Each structure stands twice: as C-alpha cells, then as structure tokens.
Image (cartoon, rainbow, N blue to C red; front, side, top):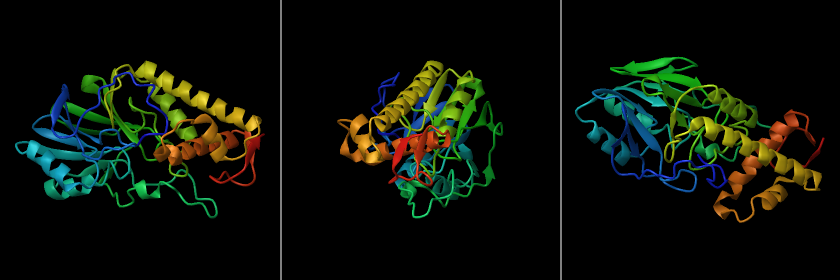
Length: 306
C-alpha cells in the first residue's frame, strides 16, 4: 500500500498489467490482481515461485476471478504452499480461498496486530484495510524457510508498514519479495497504530545489510538496484522528518497544517494517507524526545518542538 508521496524514487518505470501469468525471472512468474488504484498501482502482484510444485506468494484480495485465473494457469502444477507477506486486504484474504481450492497450507506472517495499544478515543483510520481473519497454518519467523524443487523462500522480518510484515528472500536468484515494505513506484505508507516509523526505518537499515540484487514488490515493477534505492528511501524519510520539524519550529501545531504546507498539489484522495504519514513521523519524534505533545501522540493532537 502506497504513501501519499509521488513515486520520484522509481528506478524502473515499468508497471505490470493485470490479466496474465508471465515469467519475469528464473523461478518466478507474476499475475497482477485487478485491484488497481491510487494506493495499489496497477494491482497486487501475486507471485508463483518454482515450476511443477510451486509456492504462491500474496494471492491478493478475496477475488474469485483472480483465484480462478491463477488456478487455471497452474492446472498442471501443484500448489505446495501459500505464502503471505502481511495482513492488508489487498494481499492476504485470497489465501483462504486459494487454500480451500487447493488444500495447500497458508504460511508466512502472523495474524494482524497493532504496533501499540490505541490511545483513549483513538480510531485506527486504516482499520478497514486490516485482514483480521488471517489465521495461518504456520507462522514464519526470521530465517524460517519454505521450499520446493529447486527453490527456497527465506523469511526476513521487516516490521513497519505492518508489525507482522515479512519479506522473503529467494537465494537461488539473489532476489527478495519485498511486499509493501519497499516498492519502486511509490513510498510505503506507515500509519499508526498498525505501523510504526521507528520499526520501518530499522527494517530499511536491516535490508541495507543484505546482498540481494533485485526486489519484487507487492505493487508495481521491480527495484533493480536495491542498495542505492534503500539509501534513497532512508534519505527521503529523513528529509520529510526535517520538513515536519521545520514547520513546527515555524509555528504549525497540527497535522492538517503540516500536510497543507509540505504536500502542496497533492491529489485530494491521498490527503488522509499524507496525514497518517506525518502522524507516524510525529509519533517517532515524540518518542525520541525531539517533539512534545500533551499526552500520547494523536492524529488530532497539538505538537511543538521539545
């Protein structure tokens, strides 16, 4: 799920289209779900790993037509595992329909959970995006594997976008399925209380220590130079943090004021996402003692330099 920022960090402008299962790299095929929009690009990327006995990663929304088409594509192959990166409704609900059709186990991320308890009166604005019915047969943790003939998926814990978010390395091709944590077409939304900026930034740093040469994200085309791209993402977030602090130093006190100042010309459909992104930064800044507020950080709170 994308943030409100423009996709200025894109390294590969190719945007995959829904409608067919296509080979995109050794051991990897992709079919894009027909759920395109301002937060999902052309749709959720569902990946098939291996041949003959395969894993399906992120089956997408509960869309019968998408699942039917996927199974038609794989009519002569066996689905050995259904792998899920995180519990947003554009990624995980299709896993239950696919499991019912194939008998394959659903593995990967844990059930949905928030980064912190809700503050009194707080309403999680992305609650409708959370798939709270996700109940995997096996929860994977850092380093756990799922494998088949000629392929291995290795879980990499990357909390931040959601706190149960996993990426999956495919060591046979030095590639990484990055879910919604890293995408070439747009920055990722981090929205409290489901997500947390501090965890997101730590996960970026963690990926920077790895050696994969290409990322296959949950939406949009591949990230071809991940080391350089990750440096750009971290720099972008630090610049956004600096802009927020500058607005507070200049007299802004509320999130709406900050959004209006630093997201000029923003598509009105993305204002809510922008507010949540600013909130995530403010929550992190309060936690680090750089910004003050009365009581716990809130979306409607008043903020000032510490």
